[in-house]
Length: 322
Image (cartoon, rainbow, N blue to C red):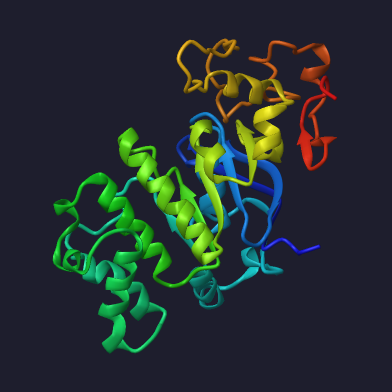
């Protein structure tokens, strides 16, 4: 059996809240609270959940763009949380990110030529005289042309800017990419183009990817497995096919019930959740989903459910499901 390329174990990320005259820590925002999962080489894993569930924080903490409060992240068997700045730089070449906002993530004062050749210079990849040719090849790989090298980001559409962001992530030939809601800021027609591009790149380059999204319809088409998060915790993990055919956790069922069926006249039976997602500053005791769960009981307030097997490669964190 192939060892996972990425192993996340009991990862926690708390953001301190300061108060009082001395600005002491008075509480914490528990953005990510004790989550574990693995990603195999060549696998695309979806990370889904409502806004505020901690998805983006997971991706940023894995790449050490945020420092973890606790837990470990092993990449290729090495605990990246224990690396110093110099050693981490070599790992940044192997682990890249596609940001959510295709405009804010690009320097408006740099032409595309500089955007794409800068990581090559930083990591000393190839001969400097070949950098522009490599940049042009990257643009062609994402559906743009060499002529676009001389343009600034504001001269492109949102979809084109996201393609440039993808090309920048691919410039250093990474083994692993965190795609942080790469299509959420784009029009629906452009979303399909970018998703198709990512699928092609996944197949051509054998990329390993953590695909963060809140749109389960998008995740179904590109991901091999799906992790469902709620308020900083993992609710369910399963293969994409199994999750969509046989969702186990009540939260997953509610999310899937909101996905429209692309067939006239067919509708899903909606499972509407009451209220809003609670504050991560003071999450509910026991199961964090219990305040909105339609099958919650008194035991749910006392027991923190652990992920348990409910099928082949399918785990769920609910004390009432089997």
